[in-house]
Figure 1: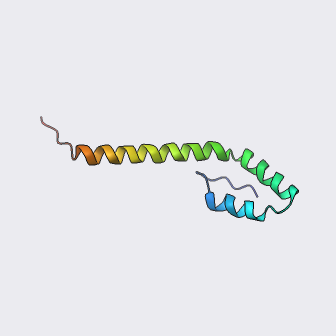
Figure 2: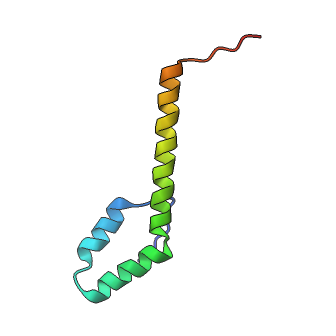
Figure 3: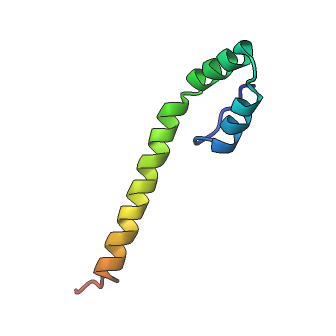
Length: 69
């Protein structure tokens, strides 16, 4: 069940949650998410998305920057 990814894998966790039909499987899923630091990865991914959106917005507002020498 342990597959390390670079980011938070929504699809994978949703599939595992759907398969967790009994207490044992739910506890295994919780343990897996703790071991993979799923919450930390989700926060990192969200922060990365915010930075990218902010950068794109600033670039769009400021337009192309030309250097004068």
